[in-house]
Image 1 (cartoon, one colour):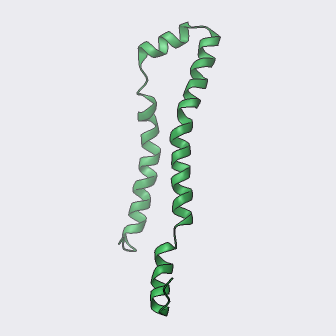
Image 2 (image 1 turned 90 degrees about the horizontal axis):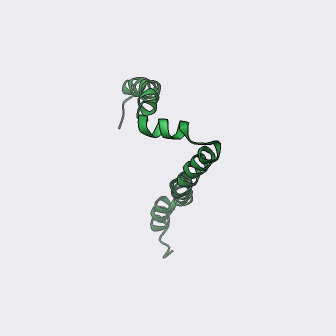
Image 3 (image 1 turned 135 degrees about the vertical axis):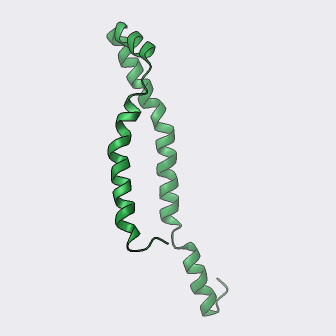
Length: 90
């Protein structure tokens, strides 16, 4: 468990990482891919952008589905303990 004094440090580290990591992710672009995309026509660029959006949909939907399931099941174990204390069979 994180103590009260460690909480501001953890928040500061999270903010620092959030501010420093995005430039590193943008620097991963391949120069060959960039030049080929820049030299291609507008039609290929639109296809590339729509392909990126299509490839993002499955992982995003799986993450949202997992979050919905976790939210719905959040009290399942707590309710089981409460039922055991009351002596019911449910």
